[in-house]
Image 1 (cartoon, helix red, strand yellow):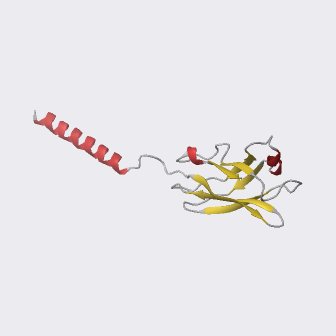
Image 2: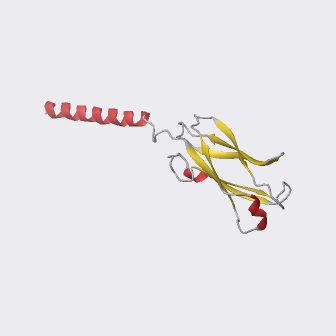
Length: 142
């Protein structure tokens, strides 16, 4: 009988250690989380769409891209904007980078006119992130 109780005690101890070890290990793998912030248009000799991409996750990201495109390409005011794709470099945890994309200069395209953009970082989903729902931002200037 003592032999069985020793075996039972060891089994309980092993089960307890396994449970304890499970509590110490994180529930998920550390992942990056890329977001877009601070979007604005700069009017100088050249017009620019300026924005910041930040890694707010808990691991560095792989290099990826951001896509910028007009929200309504049929609207005459949107012809000032062409779709663009720009590279986003590797960002360590907490790092950010300011990027800018030139806007077309043509008749009827000025900084006071209405502009609407969609910006989507990692638009081809090449980087696994802790939150895939916050990769897209819209910018609208009335």
